[in-house]
Length: 116
Length: 116
DNA sequence: TTGTAATATAACTGTAAAGTTATATTACAA
DNA sequence: TTGTAATATAACTTTACAGTTATATTACAA
Image (tube, rainbow over all chains, first blue to last red; front, side, top):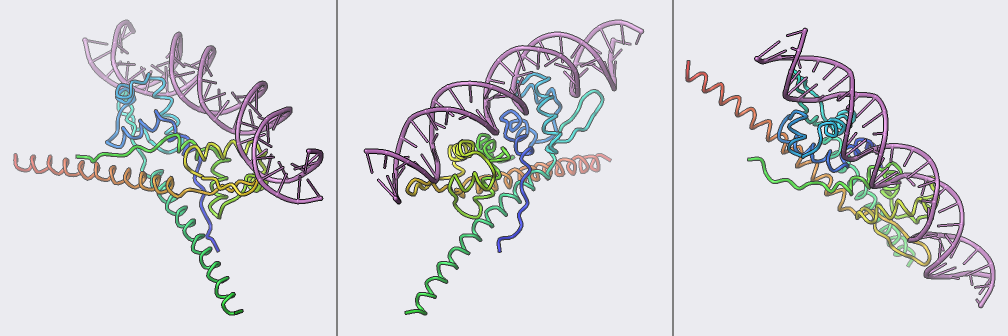
């Protein structure tokens, strides 16, 4: 039967689904940045940026490295691995179901043939 | 340099990030269902279910097949392919950056050695 | 043709989250 | 020790969206 399936954390998805946060994440792809650098590049206010970073941080998408009075934010790789794994298994599951459907149809055909 | 990168559609992500909608999507993994069947299984009201299905439909995550006065909703495979591809490229991009960083550090070391 | 089942949609309410403004905290330099 | 730059956070306003209630639409069966 169709195998067990790990659900994807929807709060983590929500964190990524907000456009400004997605923009932050894409910025950080190229390396760690401070709050100020992020705010400048995306033309967001500092408190706004901090708030978004907190959401990303609470959901394990970024981590902080304090350095003097600056704070460097960088991406954690795990969430992206989790998402990739989820999408992959999801598709496998769908394909498998279609295969099973094929088998079922085939089975019906064979049955009919045997009864001719 | 780091290659071009296709952004992920955040509205599509938002559609998936709502818990009830994620539940609907996971239900539909196992095959098409009518609105009523989904509403029953998830214990959602009919209008509520229709509303969520509209969001999923507007974002290309499901498609409808009317049959008499029922409407069968089924998953479209594309969004999941897109998400997988996005997560994969994202990770590749990050790894590549780290490799470049390694190269850079190595370069600094060589330089220092030559200057000894 | 009337009644009913399945679904969509409009109109509304409540709440959560985005975004702003003002203030607190921390580290450092003059 | 005072001033300043970088950041966080509290308090607030506004907006978006989840969820409900009531009604409209469609297909079919009696």
